[in-house]
Length: 225
Ligand SMILES: *[C@@H]1O[C@H](CO)[C@@H](O)[C@H](O)[C@H]1NC(C)=O
Ligand SMILES: *[C@@H]1O[C@H](CO)[C@@H](O)[C@H](O)[C@H]1NC(C)=O
Ligand SMILES: *[C@@H]1O[C@H](CO)[C@@H](O)[C@H](O)[C@H]1NC(C)=O
Ligand SMILES: *[C@@H]1O[C@H](CO)[C@@H](O)[C@H](O)[C@H]1NC(C)=O
Image (cartoon, rainbow, N blue to C red; front, side, top):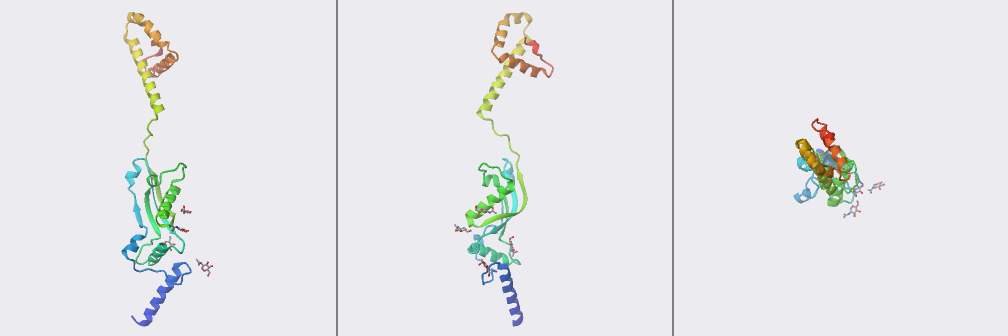
């Protein structure tokens, strides 16, 4: 390589560095070599949470890319920019690609926001807390929500279910008795049946229940009376 070509090449590189460093610094910001320590101090380019284990319990999973930003005096960020400016050899490390189970990493604090905003604030919070670098979502691939199982019953609902089941059982028993007892036996038991039916409110409920049971054509309400 002739000296002339070398000088030209050097000028090109320097010019590129000035043009791309984007601030008023007087040195070109292109970094060709990093120690392992420096390299791994940068945020990871790619990170993917497990998709199925997020969606199975009804979680929210989002995939997208983020643009990082930090003030000029942020040393790590300048290193990342310098390294990225050698775009022939390196990935752009000021763009991160993330697949995050947002419902697990950033459980909601109450207010419902659109999933992409949730995703952005979740990743931003993590880059701010780890690197003091803010992250802006610039490309969202998708956000998906897993199918939620119905929430477990509250104690009130359980109690209601138990009472209701008891009523149905009573209705079934009384209907069975009514159907199976002979007329003579019924006369003898009339006292119990009518007494049973006199519990306030219960007879109305029972009649209603029997009407429901009767809709499949087997029992009618007047069999009880
Ligand atoms: C860069 O230089 C311009 C003008 O020379 C100035 O207005 C601006 O504030 C400078 N920016 C920084 C970050 O120093
Ligand atoms: C790297 O990505 C940032 C953010 O998208 C962009 O502003 C910058 O120009 C990119 N750098 C290179 C060298 O392509
Ligand atoms: C984080 O960055 C802001 C400027 O964006 C700066 O004022 C603050 O001191 C930084 N915090 C830490 C812990 O470095
Ligand atoms: C990221 O978080 C910081 C601090 O909470 C906030 O100032 C900034 O606006 C957020 N950036 C985005 C893109 O949400």
